[in-house]
Image 1 (cartoon, rainbow, N blue to C red):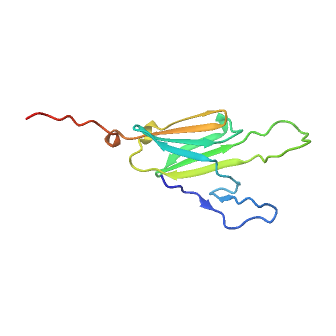
Image 2: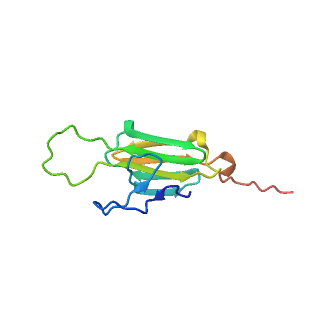
Image 3: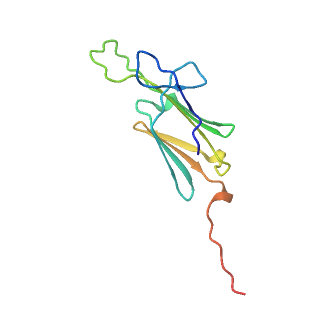
Length: 133
């Protein structure tokens, strides 16, 4: 499942962290992702801390799986110390024809997003019966 994001060659002078170029003017970072295969399909597990279900956008368009999420900022006005930046996450993957797009499902628990990409019936392994002639 090839990735479809494009790394940004230019870096801002004020930061050492490279960002991605996306289709929107917003700035995004790549969530860390594990992809593994089971007999029934692929599973994508992405770390998206601070992203509630309401701020997730997962879609498939033109064989591209897009995962996008925005962290929720706290309502606090006063910050005495802040060691992390509130970011938006963005990642894209190209899907093969073996993925059943109608049965894709996703869930998020404690900042960990799980996207299940089931295989089409024709791509699932099946047992072949041997007949005696």
